[in-house]
Image 1 (cartoon, rainbow, N blue to C red):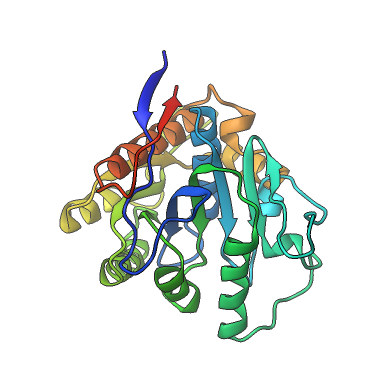
Image 2 (cartoon, rainbow, N blue to C red):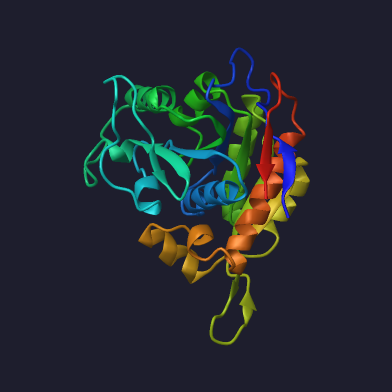
Length: 283
């Protein structure tokens, strides 16, 4: 059953205006690596596309881009005017990454200013096609890329990805506080790898602890957008270049991503608008 939701542009940081071809930029960040942030970002994007939205993903990890592999894309994007570049497309999602512009095994030995300049060029020079949502997959930490995002890219909200274990939520708290300091509203927390169900016997285990994301959300007064499972299928499909939401849309894992995407959109809808809202249809 379909429903209509308002998907207009929402307010961004002071001194910035929404991108003319992107209604809402949503940053997906974490305080540390290894929590499945990129996997979460790409599956959220595919989930939003399946719900009827126009979606893109910007790979902001200049030193370790992963979106080309996760979306099964290769080759170089086209440039019709030698100034701007066409986004690559997979599963109905537009994407851009430095990984499309350099050799796969070529290390990016760049200082911070070069990396941040590359990020702003990818954002500004890509010919995004009238998107409802652009998810920006940030690198781990709270460094130059995150600061550039906060200062130069109009962001409507941020999502923090963590695992339940205490050491992960300690770093996730830093990412959350960073967004607060730069006046980017945190839409919520996604707890990844929350529970594992044995495929042989059905035994349920919380391998990385239990309830860490919920406790963090309660402490900082932000929603827990969802708890995602630890499943081999998510990893296998990611390695194969087909996100689980596209590969197995009826699976419990895919449904968990879709539920988190819905909740994220609901939280964004509570934020102040910028300009005239546009009607979009989500299924």
